[in-house]
Image (tube, rainbow, N blue to C red; front, side, top):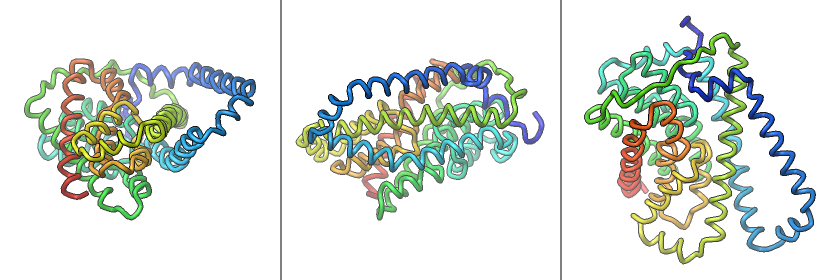
Length: 341
């Protein structure tokens, strides 16, 4: 690969390579059809929808939902844009040359590099695969996989906006997420079986112009992440309006249960890390360590990531790596949250 040419590993999950090769034609048609169908349904049922929206509960739900989405969208767009730029235009050798060959130092450097390399979960998985293929120690690539979506500048700024006047929340997120990346990678280096990680067949998309790959990555990741943002906002609004307040109060009085609940919610919602702080902040009645758990668990292990890791690294790897990451993320959230929050 020549200097300035993106590594084809990063472009090459089977689904992603086919997506770029086909120019997103199928996804575009399906998306347009879905939007058209939704518009027709809303048009035909406009009177019934108007009556429904006038109800107090629905009004409260829509207010929470819209406020969450509007706050999060700018950071989501910025994160996806920077992620696509990183994947397509930053030469892979520039990244790998900065990582030591020894496992211990490599884990630390790779973990800290997440603070300067913006990217969401969708980009971190193929980037980690590219690092492994370029000779970076496997554990270091996994440290980068976990840290990049969680402690990059866009995510930290979004967290500061979501929790105004609470810089300790930003610090707690940084330390807990970095700790998860380093601890999980170190445990895998010591006890994990490197042979379990199976990289997929490389498809060569280097003949495509960079701008075409950039546009395809931007379009897919924005639609993909935007869908999860809408889903996450809807779930958060539903929980905030439909769940009885005494249930929330019960969680607020039990720190361990609240942390477990928010951790499981993060796994289920699978919201992009650039927007998850706004969803977490909507659960203000819960203790801050529980909100921290939502922000630490989500970028490290959720349904979307488990699916991507299975496709890129194999099921045998994922069924061991995901539970380890989830457990460490909960403990880190508890320890850091109690100390700083």
